[in-house]
Image (cartoon, rainbow, N blue to C red):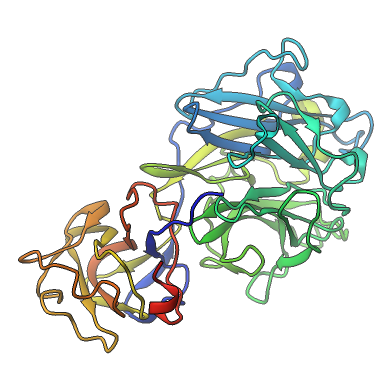
Length: 484
């Protein structure tokens, strides 16, 4: 397993690590769509009119390549998705820049980029590159729920992401999950997790975990629409990605049409977009700024105006977080009801957020302030990810547990941040040493105006650019639980 990160970070998903917060407005990051989307289109005969995420986009740091696995389908008004006459493939493409993709000619189905042929009836696949796996023949893993197997969860392994073999003859989880399976491995604990439905069309998200891929925990209902969601909203599925002390969830929000349009219980007509959820343990999930879209639908008539489906993972790059998604200008019912000749294409695009940009605090022209709960660190080097604009600034104060500033570390002593920085080293006039409060119980205060604050963190010698690796304070006895 990877060693536990020593980097201590304060994020802003909720108030757990804070004593108070005045004036700030918590905001959900809005993913910025690439101006030249879509980046992947259906062009080959076996892609029909759909390049679709049921699938994965990831960045392979070892090979310095973006890699994507995407589904292609053929079905329609006369042939249902589960019909033996329908077609379903898993395909592979790669790119050096994440924008211009190559569809290689492979040997699985010679002359094509297909990696799972129609006999596998690909449905709901997610691919991970398992860097913790000691067996190179199982470096890549895939979870999916083929229609020919009752939509139970099956696992596959591959040495290269191209040549796949079933890991087991039987499903690892017996359910009827006709959706995109979420699948990830925690980089520190090594635990595998999957998200899925238990039956069709029960559009809620369940989760199970395993240490060895053989024995799985009993599925637990992880997240479902609540009283703050509209009556017509359902959760089509949720894709999961580790992020420091959290697992992030990309919820496929399904806003079904009125019963006068679709009176059936399975509700096949509606639009889809992406909202955000987060969890500290993979089982207890919370919404992040509920009701706000992380990736919103495009304007009427645009290529992504009706249905957006996320790739299975968020990609962490040094200067941005990337979210690939597939989209179409027709609602969910269109692919099963519109004659094939009249179908518009489903394409793939990409959107991005700044590092730590899932949720942030916005400060207006008036001073805003927060103070953390008590904690302890071994190294006092402190950094900010924040953006101050138009005369704005962010100031930091280090205090004892009673909230009294240590000498030399007050707001008045602080050299404020007055620009945009992903990793601004916090300094105080005279460069006082931090040894007086290292390994002691402390608090931090942040005061800001005309600024957005994304995170503050103590790297403890780790790479400040690897913003996706961190832990939280314990919110328990700091001298027992926060120190190594």
